[in-house]
Length: 112
Length: 115
Image (cartoon, rainbow over all chains, first blue to last red; front, side):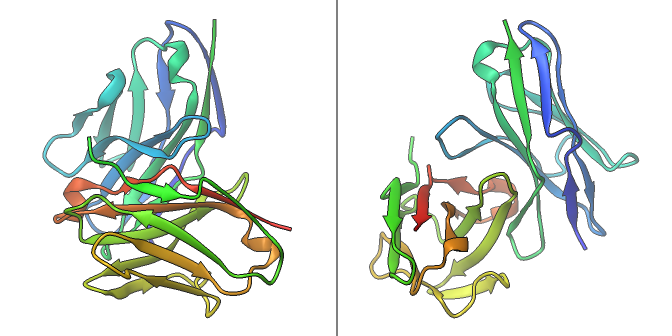
């Protein structure tokens, strides 16, 4: 069965520090992977997606993610955190019936 | 930029009452979904809809739930007799082909509180 695991329900960084949010997946077929962000009281916004074209994927707001098949990972990074990045981040895998399977989410806290 | 619109943003209802959650997907999208997120839990798939019929539904989507696309623009989720455990944020999403390349686009959600 396909699944997504996000390590760390909460991650806290200082403003200007590197952001690293971890996502591992399990899939028997080449995966389609997504990162979504949820700001307080808002919906899920697509940050970026991996669709097998390139292993390093750039998204909005300076985020990027690298697909590593050998590690079954799709970690999200941003070189320098901003206060406005504080939100909940969800990694998701699309299955063969075009539905998303979500990880449990990671809440990013940015300290001034 | 086109967006998925959901109404109402908050809905409070009494247990046993019927509720209808409304969504207006992005206009050229053909794939529609409902997800829900119970407080503190994962975002869960409820149902997908394509070509005027349900494509897939989860085990959560029992006979109390139904979906409809009554006209060319709206997509609704009806809960016939709400239970306390139906309290959650409900998200509508839509997409276009190829879905695996485009991803899903979500609305801002309807917070349903069942008292």
